[in-house]
Length: 125
Image (cartoon, rainbow, N blue to C red; front, side, top):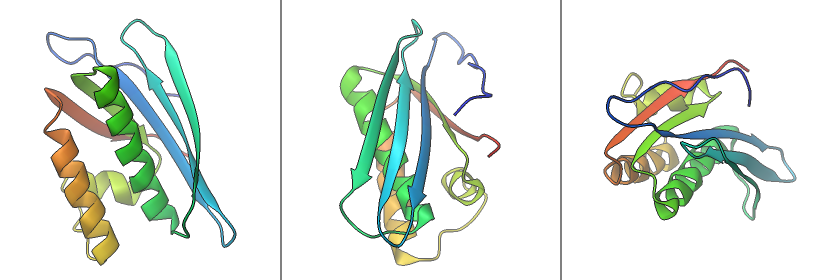
């Protein structure tokens, strides 16, 4: 979860959210790092108690990270994921077709309204 720089949102310093997830036949989980505008890191490791795909795990990590950021008081959020598909779906470049992805995308859209600004970028794997 390295290799990104903080981009300025006009008029405010954003919180940064980095997520990375993984899913195997046996288990799935995610790493979430939330960075305050002052540079303090809040790190989470999450084990999902359900079987899921890599894409769904990435959505779940983003959704959880956004909820944590909201609860922590973030109003401007700059998020990073290494999933090309998920970033493109959330940014409206790709269409979500699978029902579980459509539901996750709807949750993301609702969560985005809780922030004054929200941006999602892909980071290289």
